[in-house]
Structure formats: structure tokens, C-alpha cells
View (cartoon, protein in one colour):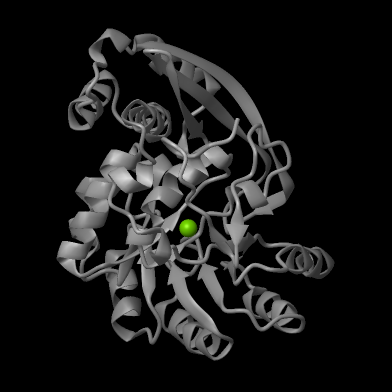
Length: 336
Ligand code: MG
């Protein structure tokens, strides 16, 4: 196999502010793997707070010996090999894993969703994320979300209620809330959760610090709506510990090191009775389609990468009634 890659800067439509960070673009590494005339596409989205960068990704890729990659592809062995090169760096590992899955589908002449056993009829609607912002910008963003069936709101500041009221002044669509570890008092958080339930909020991500296991578990025990662990759950080894602390987990390919391990996480979560949200970072159509392949096996989807960015180098996937469409093309179904 032949590996090529290209650094890319993905520009966001709006400055994106969550409880702890703010940014206007995200560094990506676009990866291609070629074998017998077919090319698989992959992508690493390296949001700064996760610690990866163009430099760390380049250094990692320079250590990858693609002569290890044979067809038929042994995904478990390859993830094991990538983990042996360096600890961490799940995004650049995901880029390789996604490219391999796209290539695998093309070599088999099948769409990835069929290989993974996903039923396109079970595709959940995807939410559209609105970061923390001024009232006018929030209203502008809600306008842009027209046609989307769910809005996800980033909370975690003193102005949380005002932000929800601003959105509720113009739309009644269901809401998801992501506190990004920003809440500190469990009783105040629970009061807020009851209020949010009345506002049509259907789930809450990562209310308190991921290290505050007792605090998150207490909120989960008392909350009338599902509490989902995100920052607390990165890879397969973290899933079991989420049981009893959260109602469900947020799986992202950029945390799980790709599609192979994300599927293992889905299986593990189901075994433990955990709900599943499949989420994303700032991503192009490539990683979004890779997550969409697995989305029909999850309860909720938050795959809005291409909707929040302005220089996606690929065609946007088709969306119907707020759901990504899994097409019949081989591999991921990415139009380049
Ligand atoms: Mg989150």
C-alpha cells in the first residue's frame, strides 16, 4: 500500500466558543491509502485541546511502515500496531483507520455501512451545534439551522438560561445540551437540568469535570433526562467505567482511533446497557461519512462537521429530513 498525506486548515463558519475554549479554525491531516488502483480517504481532525497538531501527525505518519498493511485488512492488528508506535494521538490513528475502511469497501465493491451491518433506515437525525455567543449571533445561527431537526447548545457559563431563552424565542425544535465539564455545583446543576427539561432539552453531555466521578454519578442518578459522558470516555477501555456514572457515552472517531474501535465501543456499550451518542469534531465530509456509517447503530447523532465549516474540500453528503443519507457507493461514499 502507498500512504500520502496533506495538512489542511478547516475554517469554521463562526468563531466557536464552548465552556473552556474558543477558536476559528481546526488543523486537519488528510490521508490517502492506495492499493491495487483504489484509494481510501481518511482524515484527522486535531482540535487544539486534544493535544495533536500538524507536527505531531507528520511525525507519527513518518513512523508508520505501510508494508505492514496487507489485503485483506486486519483492522485489529493494525490498531494494535498503531498503538505500539505511540500512546495517545487517536485522531491521526483514526485518519489511517478511516482510509483503510474506505479502501476496504472499494476493494470489496461494497458500501462501508453494509460491511458494518448498519441499516440506513435507522439513521438518527443529526443535531446542529450552536456555541456560546452574543444574542444576535445566536439568532443568526438558529436561522442557519433551519431544516435541522435538533439543535445542540453549548452551555457552561453564568448566562446558560438566557442562551436557552434566546433560542426558545425563535424555535421549538428539541435541544441537546453540552456543558463540556463546565458545571461545578451538583444541586444547582440538577435544578438547571429540571428547568432544561421543561425547555425541551432531551439529553445533557458531560455536566461536570470528567474527574468528578461522584458528582457526575449523582447527577445521573437524579436527572430526569439522559446524561452522556463525552470527555470522560475516549477509547474502548473507558466504556466499562462509564456504567453507573452516565446513562450513555459519546463516541467520536477522533477519540476512539477510528471506526474499528468505535464499533467495539458500540458493542461494549450495548452489552452494559449504555445509550450511545455518536459525535464529531470539526470535520469534513470524509470523517462525517465514516461516523454516519455507524450512526444507525447509535441512539443519537451529532454529526454536524460539514454544516459548521466553510472550506470542506469534498462534496457535502446528502441530507434529507435532518439525516445524512448513506448512499450505495463503495467505501464511505465520499464524493471528491
Ligand atoms: Mg461534548
